[in-house]
Image 1 (cartoon, rainbow, N blue to C red):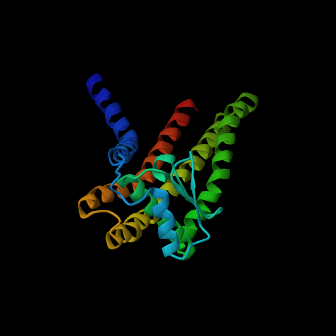
Image 2: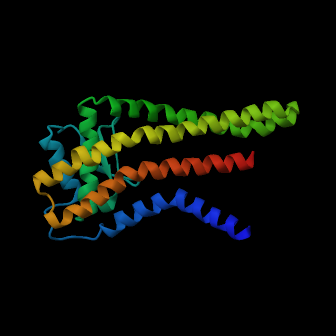
Length: 227
C-alpha cells in the first residue's frame, strides 16, 4: 500500500507539473543563440505586424512572460525572445503576433477569451475573499452547513479559472498552427531543417495554458485541503 500511495503521488505530481516542465524545457532547448538567423524575435514581430498592416501595434519587452496585450495593443516578449536570435524567439514572436491578428480581425473566439480573462481577475478576488471568510464565519456562526457552503462556493469560483484556460486552448492552437506556422513556412523565416523545432516550440506556446489550468487545479486542491 505505501508503494502504491507513493506511486499515485508521483503520478499526480507528474500530471500537474509535467506540462509546465516540458514547456520550459522546449523553450530552453531551442532558445540557443543562432547568429545565422536574419533577425531577433522583436524584429520579426515588427516585420510581421507591418506585413499585416498593424503598424499601430507596439512591440515591447516584458518581465511578465510573452503575451499580447489587447488593451494596450502591444506584443510583449521576454528579454531573451525580444533580443535573442533563436528558433524559440522566432516561433514565439510569430505566435504572439498571431494573437494581434486575431484581435484585429475581430475573431469571436478571441473576443470571448478577452471577456473571460477580464472577468477572471475579479472572480479570483471574490474566491480568495470567500476562502478567507469561511473559517471566520464558522467561528462566529458555529454552523458547519454555512462553512461547507462557503467552501464549495470558493472552490467553484476557483474552478472557473480552469474553465477559462480550457476555453483558451482553441485560440492558442489557432495562433500556433493556423497562423504562425504557415507564416514561418511561406515566408521562409527559418530553414527547412529548423521547422520541426519551430513546430515543437509553437506546440509548447499553445500548451502553456494547459500548464496554467493544471496549476489552478493544484491550487484548488490546496485550498480544499486547508478548508
